[in-house]
Structure formats: C-alpha cells, structure tokens
Amino acid sequence: MLGLNYFKAEPSDYVRKVVKGKVVKEGKGISGFYMPFRTNIEVVSTASIDTPFVFKEISNDNQEVTIQGGFVYKIEQPDLTLEEYNLSINPKTKEYSSDGKEKLAQHLIQLVRSESRALVQSSKLEDLIVGSDNFSETISDKLSSSTEVSLRGVKLSLLYIESILPKPEISKALEAEYREQLLQKQDEEIYKRRANAVENERTIRENEMQTEIKIEEDKKELVKLQSENLKDEAKAKAEAAKLELGAFEGLSSDSIRAHALYQLGKNADRIENLTITPELLAGLKSTR
Image 1 (tube, rainbow, N blue to C red):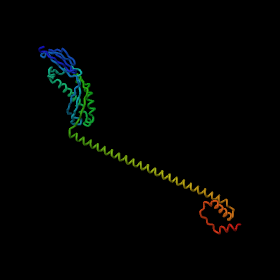
Image 2: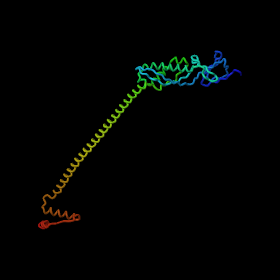
Image 3: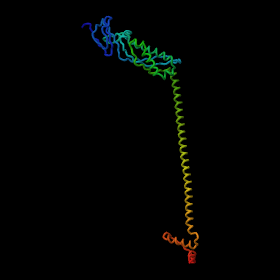
Image 4: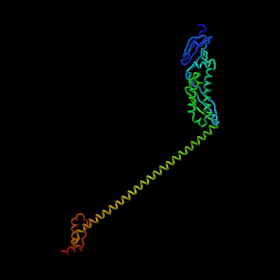
C-alpha cells in the first residue's frame, strides 16, 4: 500500500506507537504497519546496559583521587522513562532521532558522581584506596533507594569500582611507604624464623644433654650394681672356700697331702704334666 511501512521491534525493546500525538499501541517486541508522515515510534531497550564512568574528586584530607568504574542498569518502567526522555527513532534505520538515550546515561552518571562526592569528601585517601569494595556497596545501596533513579523507570542492578587512584606523585610515595612496610615485615619474619631456629636448636641440645645425663646415670648405676655383685660373689666364694677348708681342720699335714694326691688322681685325665718331688714322696713314706 502506498505510504505504508512495516516496523518490527526486537524482543527486548519496549515500543510506543504514537499517531497524531495519541498513543495507539505500546508493548514489548510489537510490530506492525505505520504511516511515516503521521506516526512517531519510540523505543526503550529493557536489556541490561553497562555504563562506564571516570571522574575526579577531593578526599577529606585534600587529596585528588580518580574514580574509575561503571554500573549496570535496566529500565523496568519504560512509561516513566518515555515521560522524561525523547526516545523517538527512525523506523527504517532504528537510530535515535535525539540524544535522549545519552542524556539518560549522563543523568545516571551524575547521580553516581553526586553520591560518590559526598562519600569521598568524608573519607581519607588511605581509607578510599583500601576500601573500594565498601565504597561501591555504599553508593549502590544509596542509589537503589534513590527516587531520582526510580522516577526515571530505572533499576540499578550493579555498581562496581575498578580503581580509586591518587595523583601519580602521591601514588609513588604511597608505594614507597608500602614497600618499606613490606620490607620491614619481611625482616620481622626473618628474625622470627631465626629466633625459632635458635630456640629449636637450644631445645635439641637440652634434650641431647638430658639424654647423655640419663645415660651416664644409668652407667653409674650399672657400675655400682656390678661392683656390688662382684663383692657379693667374692664374699660367697670366700665363704665357700672357708667352709671347704673347714673340712680339713684338725687333720695333720700328711693327711692333707694325701688327700691332695688323691684328688689329683681323680683328675689325672685332665693333667698333662705333673712333677712329684722326692720330698713329697718322702713325707708320705715316713707316715707309714
């Protein structure tokens, strides 16, 4: 049909079709014919959009910091968004005919910056550098409950901080200080390890000394016991010898001599050499 065109939206696009200033159709992913000369088509993407940002602020201790990050937002109430921004498109090219989309992103960035400024100005540089995670959580919580965000039909689903950096010269100074702290900590750890090593070596030496003392005490006790045993054994032998010799008490020397020869005869097989002097035989002969 002459002058009649066809438009088809993406599934995630919220479309509003306006004819002569009157909304005739709206919804997600709608399509249909339209007459260009009297129809205006507005489109709002309801997909999640990631928007980066970079800006500078001054901390509580008068230090300039550069905050770099981004946020993810999603338009959940397109009708509110369309009331605030002109999101008309060229139906053929699907390009926006105004800067409404960019304005929405810029306004959200300004809201992020406004909340960030208040937090940065109340914080010291060191706290900002080490607390970027807490920083992003605080800003995200504030913007989630902000009426300025909700009135635009937007929901902020994520805010992240990639870095919070001071000026290069301040950064170098902080790096030097941090490096010095690391070296000091390293020295402390080395000292602790050496002290532990010395303590362990002392403990080992004490244990070895105690072991040696115990060994020497055991040796002393063993020597004492062996000495007592030898004494007891000598006493027992002496008593036995005394008893054995007691059997010969009252006997004449000749009788004892004869008994000795008798004992020699009993053990003759064990004697290799024996010398009998004439005096011994003379003594025995005279007794008969």
